[in-house]
Image 1 (tube, rainbow, N blue to C red):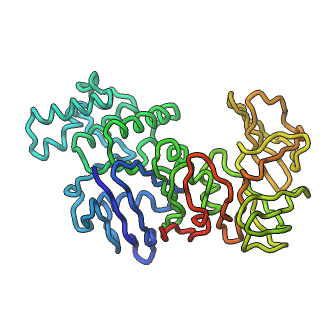
Image 2 (image 1 turned 90 degrees about the horizontal axis):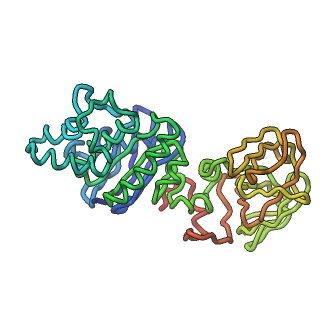
Image 3 (image 1 turned 90 degrees about the vertical axis):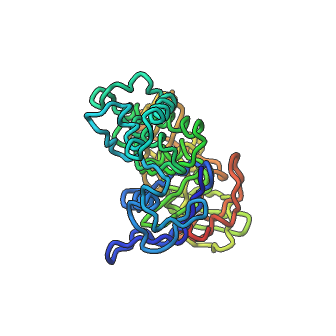
Length: 381
């Protein structure tokens, strides 16, 4: 497979700069996911890697070789789009082998490559069918098979599951993860769905407004978000936020006054904080616990029962909160509840949105504390 390196990539459309100097390294055989809200630049960045858009400045390198002036067909990459773009008059086999046919590959070799791709994608029994006789998931597998037969150095996926229903998206996520393992390939995947990013990626690149907010493994971003944007974007349901007042702070922790009057000491580096400062407290819904003696209280306004867990939406101290409880919780809408959290699970964010460095370590995570106070753009990496 291959490595990819982006050096200070900028993309401008007229006077509008949509990609603002991105630096990124994708290692051989990594599954990297670009994630962010609509308009953040993730698809534009992928299209520049593919050669479908030109970079205004900066270098794009594959295996150390600059490819900015290399045409899309000569880059050795394969892209799978949101739209299947299958030829309706061709069979599955012909669709998958069409690019090889254009390249002058012999019929026998084309068939061999198509059969191997069909085996990997479990399409052997569908090779004689035409696209109209396939389900959405099967059509997307054919589009992926069309990429596999080219034996690309890097696979590029541009929101390939967004046209599928919820059940098929889950199934295809599993199939793509299995495919990555079987092909041992370098893959770059674009999505706005952070659940897709968390479940498939070796490394997640969070983008907003044309800059990289943070790069890291799914659990690094979950436990150690660099700033409030990443904290709110990664995780489902999203993190709860509330303003708190600093009572005391030093390098070993920050004591804050909670909404409702309670107090808590959060194990973060508070060297830059002063008594009276206002910070933002962040706590994930799954880290809140129903507790009759808890320091926070609220009234249940909505209950979502999901089987194994139940999400309680609360009109609580400090605003609206979400609490994920056991699936069999007996509370009803309009009930008043109290709740608490472990201080080591809490996050504190400064006025500029940057996270105060956590002093707690978590399994599966290996990051330097100082990274949490780095530039929010992530381009200092």
